[in-house]
Length: 516
Image (cartoon, rainbow, N blue to C red; front, side, top):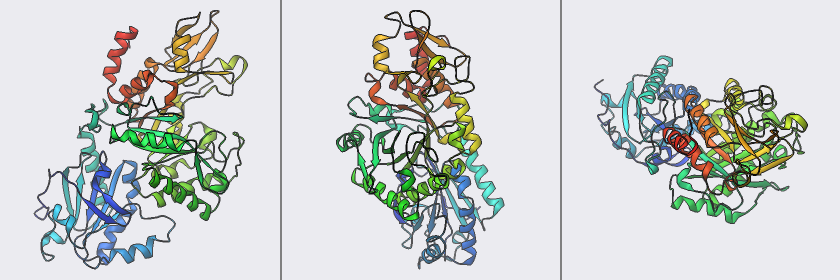
């Protein structure tokens, strides 16, 4: 088409005012971006194009593609239209629209020609790769169903063929599965002193915890430790630092989610902490909506209110801050949470894929707590794979599921030990022996008489979980929690399991005589 600007291959950078506040293209590094522009006046015909894009926004979000609108109308006529249609609507505008009356951004994309030329008449769609390069430009007379489907297919083809380093700070390799839409990430929850946290191994850290006080404000266990985590960005500028609100037995969620006023008060309090402590987002650890199993207040309406609470949080934090949810994939959780509705609102679902045997006593205490697959030593059909598949079936995209790893060992409800303790006192010493369940892909420890002593994870099980992440296009791995692995032995395995699975395999062959 002769009206397509000749700007492809250009490395891009810009900052601009938008309907979602000040945005910077670099904020979306690592994601595909589609910049939409309908040059000229914001008239009735052009509004239909914007409506088509809004209608399909959820389809792009599921593929982890960021939409950005660009309005070049000299009168900024899009603003009153947006405010009248979306300001008080049930659903907010799903992507930012840049006010480009001065044509600052238009010049970058070679759209600065006179308004009478053919170049200005058609809809322009600029596809920007995760490394911030313009890779393709499309032009249509108008946008409808056929054009949107064509755009999505074009993006799927570009995603499949794209082989960039998403983790440029460590020059990491791309994942082994070329069909996955995103590069997986790795992170840790930190409870207590972050002294052993190695930010070069991680893409994100989550401070645990802040609690909801009776007056609706938050109180963190230690603001000093929270600041020390954000200071790690000096070592790794790409590190995302989040604050987790809640935890087991943490009260206040049902009340905070109960009314529009309480929900937006919660969201504004979260924003205050994000701004004050230079955070990249918030993790919601409500254990669990619609359930009083942890001894907290619950209500039947928690299910819907949880979705509305996340909606308020997204409205207030905007599109660029992370929102993650910590939860499980068992049926009781999924029945109380609108998985398909929260999926477009959050960045990741942190699957607590552990503690499967946490409430068990007697014979069933001696079962796996974090097995990848079911076996004779699991609690029935309970497994990481089962929970992952439950979440996907409920509407959570696999690329948003981050699999959790326990950095501790468990014997039912009776005993837990940190990996540091296990490493010093239970790994084939003091009469204890490590065994490996090859069906479940899970290690366990037996005592001197051969009785089941502890279920835990080690570098070998983490290798198999890393493979699972690659093969099933999961979002990555995270751990609970950092201080239990002070030497970062499991943290290094977890990092390699996401970033360089072959290096982890070679390490296991050398150190464990591993034969995969």
